[in-house]
Image (cartoon, rainbow over all chains, first blue to last red; front, side, top):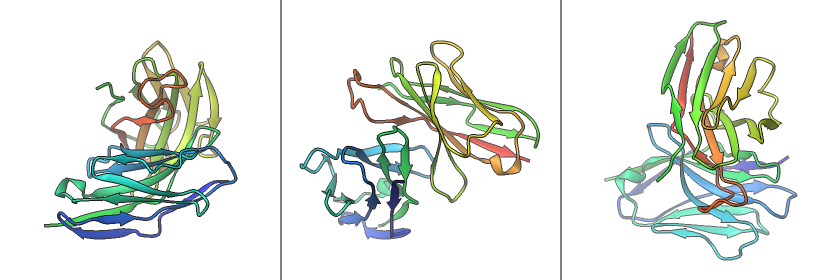
Length: 113
Length: 118
């Protein structure tokens, strides 16, 4: 069975600084998708970025980028120029071949003004 | 930008009562899902639905749960006899499928329905 592990329950970063959230996963599948979702206090799940496992190039979306290391089964999220609006719970997620998404336990990110 | 919508935003019910949570997936999406998140815990998969039938369900999705797509737009989750432990945030999601335009393999989530069972 696939698992997703986020080892940092909470992190803090100074506004305008860069922060990296860690995620590792375990799978025997060769083709899959990885995602980072953001959950603000409203508890809505917002897609931040996605990565196809067959692509070697790391995905980027404006200030958000990932470091995808397929062999190491690592998928970290880097947030550059952190803003107060980035404060939220961030979930790393794996989409299996069976189509369901498996979420990590989340990392709560605090932005310090 | 199209989005998944869910109603109600908050539902309060008595233990043993039936509840129906409603979702309107993104138009032209073909795959539908329900997830739940108990407060303070991670999001868990409940069920996936395609072509008017369940594709996969988790061990959480027992006989008390059912899903339906009663018309071309709504996707519902029914809990027949609610228990205290059913209190959670319930998220609906939809995915375009192979022919989608904006990331066919991305599940887009609705804002959630907070279910409180008293």
